[in-house]
Amino acid sequence: MARDENSTPKGRYLYSVVPAEAVDKLELDVAGIDGAEVHPLVCGALAAIVSDVEPRELRPERRNLAAHSAVMRTLMDQTHLLPVAFGIVAGSEREVRELLADHEAEMVEQLEGVKDRVEMGIRGVLRVEDIFQYFVEKLPELRRMRDEVYAGGEPSREEKIELGQAFAEYLQEFQDEWADAAVEHLRSIGRIRVNEPRSEEEALNLAVLVPRGEMEAFTRAVEELAPTFDEHIELNVTGPWPPYNFVDLRIRSGEEEAEEAR
Amino acid sequence: MIAPPIVIGTPLMWIFRTVHRAAMDELKNERRNIRARLSELYRDLERGEITEEQFDEKERKLLDQLDELER
Amino acid sequence: MAQVKSQSNDSSSLAEVVDRILDKGIVVDAWVSVSLVGIELLSIRARVVIASVETYLKFAERIGETAAVAAPGEGKKQPQAEPEKKEAEAEAPTAV
Image 1 (cartoon, rainbow over the protein chains, first blue to last red):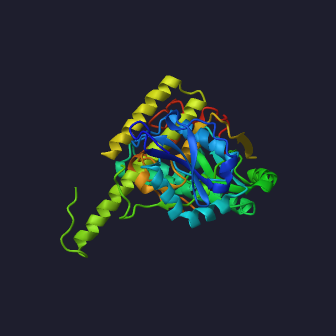
Image 2 (spheres, chains in turn brown, blue, cyan):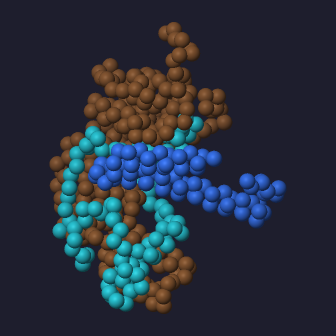
Image 3 (tube, rainbow over the protein chains, first blue to last red):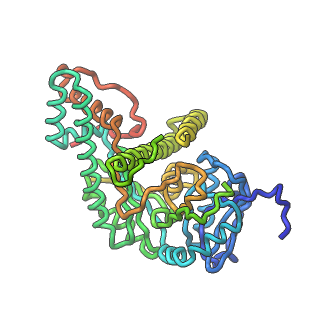
């Protein structure tokens, strides 16, 4: 295919890897990064979903994140897939095909692992007015430390650090306990990934890979889980999502990797 | 900038590795920090706690901070 | 009793999206165009304590403020009436 090398961007922004057999039926009527057209690059059993882009530093600005997200939503309705992280730009089409060829077995295997499954997110939020008050009331040991540290006026920096660190450790213990309870309850549904809670107010942050036939069972399981938790914890379920939490593929630079495009 | 130690296996090497690891951890923390704040920013916008203009302003600052990390 | 709230994948909600696409998914080191992309090792339990001194100090200060609430008149500081952005809709009842 003849191309004017000067006008067509050489870089390929990667959104996702899908099975080659899914490509024929794909409708990719969605705008990608910079409003570019989204198209598949087939190689063997796999296809990469890409768009043409100038190789450059891509800022994770809203419009870029939104474009990436829109492409993913379109895709996940049509095929199972392996999501690519934001901002992965290959130097050329050739490089993309090489990636697929070099990692075909692994990618095919991971695709199998997410076939007919969707990712659901569960976040637990502590709905209290002040979480520090909440923990101080819940933990006599923390209360004692607080009273000691603040007994004689403004505490030293070291005392504060020690107190803060103790709190952090208690918090993590609770978050671990809540995560353990949730995993125990939900593991029969599907794979689970326990993530770092985003803040002190977040009690729980899980992703569950739910097989398509099990969505009802999943919902029931979450509803059964809720009463076993502290009454102030609110469980928020989101999804379905592309299986970001269940893809484990980090391709590192080899000596043979040419840096020319960057 | 840390000059590589001359002799492998000495305490110098250990210090080099430790400082490097600390620097990498620091960098990872910074990145995770910015990611978390970006996520919060979207939540604030979606909850209507900040305006579009405020979002754009804060987003710009965060992304600039990110660029700084690169140096 | 803890409540469950379901939110479907709201097409305009980027907060959840951001937590995923910046942190997870296939990463090709040589092609990363933004340094925010997660390069942590994946494990079944991705819990790494992100401790920083600033965080500990902040925790200590907030804990110090609870002293003032528990014993009004004895405390050194009055609790700040700062808007708690994240918990704007938090219920009033104190924790048990």
